Image 1 (cartoon, rainbow, N blue to C red):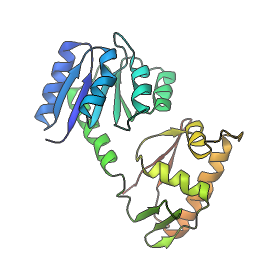
Image 2: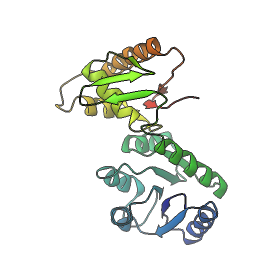
Image 3: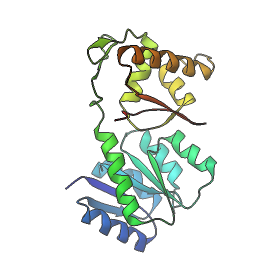
Length: 222
C-alpha cells in the first residue's frame, strides 16, 4: 500500500468513487460522512493524508482543519465547490496543503494526493541542507550559512513542512512566540537575508518561494 487516506465527505456516491480510484492507485482508504467524526477518526487511525470536504453536516471543513492542526501535521487536501479567494486564503491560514475544486476528475484527485505525499515525504531530504537545532547551525552543501537565531528558526520551520504555504502572521507567531509587537514586513526582511545567505552558499539553490498575496513556502526546485 502507498498509504492510508481518510475521506471526509457526506456525498456517499462521490466518496465511493474517490475510494475506488485511490484503492486502484494502491492506497488504503476509510470514510466518514459527518464532520463531528473527522477529528476522532484522525486520532484513531493516523492517516497519511486527509481528503476533507468543506461543507459537511455537524462541523464544516474549516473547523475540522483547525482542530486537526492543533494536534497533527497530517497533509490535508480540501475539497470544495466554494472557490472564492477568501476561502482559499482562510484554508491556507488554517494549514491546508492543497485544494481540489468541484466538479473534478477522480484522476486529478489521485494525482494531487500523490503530489502532496511526495512533498510531505521529502521533509528532511532537502538537497544538501543540514539543520542542527541544538547548535542553531545550518549548512548547505557543506557550507555554513551563518544564520542568526531567528533566521535559523524560520528556515527550520519552513523546511520541516515542504510545500506548505504559511502567511506572514503564522510565521511571526512561530518565530516570536512571546507575542512581541513587530511588523509583518519583519518576516520579509528575514526572508530576504535568508535567501541571500542561501544564494552565497549555493547560487543555484532556490529553496524559499514567495506565494503572491499569501506568504512563503519551502520547496526544492529541481
